[in-house]
Length: 319
Image (tube, rainbow, N blue to C red; front, side, top):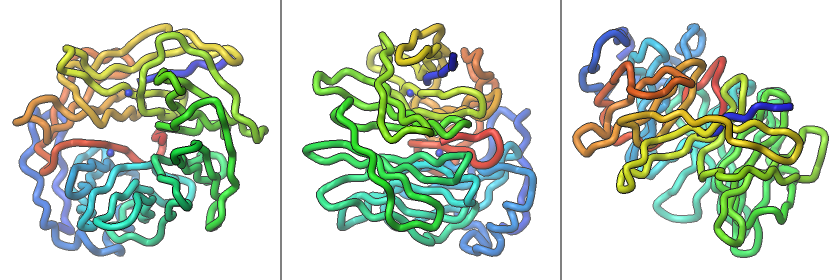
């Protein structure tokens, strides 16, 4: 039996204590921020890296110290896709000023694009997930006729295609610690559905979960998670639906609520992160005890951009 948790990114660094209620404005013109050598040095430390994606750039901070490292500013919008910790790369869904959305590849801690994956003909890339056991990269594609997954081995430019007809549109995905791929999507009726590609199989199977909501899937080191975004017009905060799975069926066994949160939720060990709700607070990151949730115990920011997505790379992080 598996338990799946569901919920809907200067050369001298100055440590910022989590004991402080609010951190100072983060300087974006950081000396050395565009140096791949400096960024790679960060990887030799024990700290993970917190990526915070906004509309214009992605800000990087050491984690948990929250010291500024640098920014990624390609001149077009980036959305965090996934981090492939075994291979040392992070991927962003990119919407360039011309052409179709694609997947851009960066060295973890780096600020310059080093590669990527172009969309297949007449298809759009909507997300990705990295297998922690192999370093394989699963890329989600959708078009007017079908939605499918291609899995790329490390260093390969040609992925293996896995077709499926269980859902019409793929939405998000993650691998668990055993190399099983989980994908969430929408059926023809608009209902949210969960499917799985077992590590030992080439065929997707459906998992029936009553009351499942649209969310971003994530492996947190122990469980599969889906982070459900807030709907403040309806008075709903971000939530984490916890679901117990047995075979091809699942049951929601609990819900974690993140008060004052909004979007970009991420789970890192016993901590949940979320962007804060409110036009004058939207550049703040909130920290919660997980899975308890409730009110945040810490506020960090402003980070210089409205928080859209977040991810923490390194040990105990997922996709």
